[in-house]
Length: 35
Image (cartoon, rainbow, N blue to C red; front, side, top):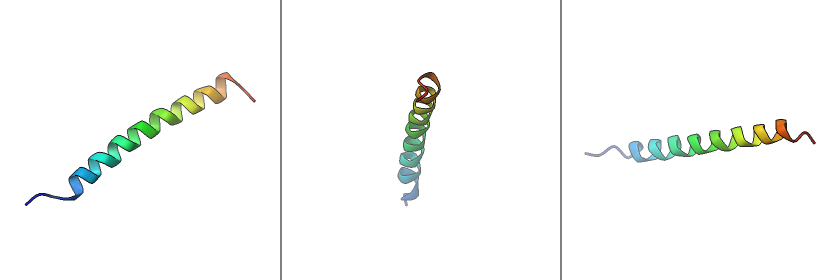
């Protein structure tokens, strides 16, 4: 019996990782190029 939460958790983890990288890029851009 497979757990339906496992794929969802993996997807959330991947999405969170991508979002974290994007957040770092945005923060870096905000620091490097002050508006």
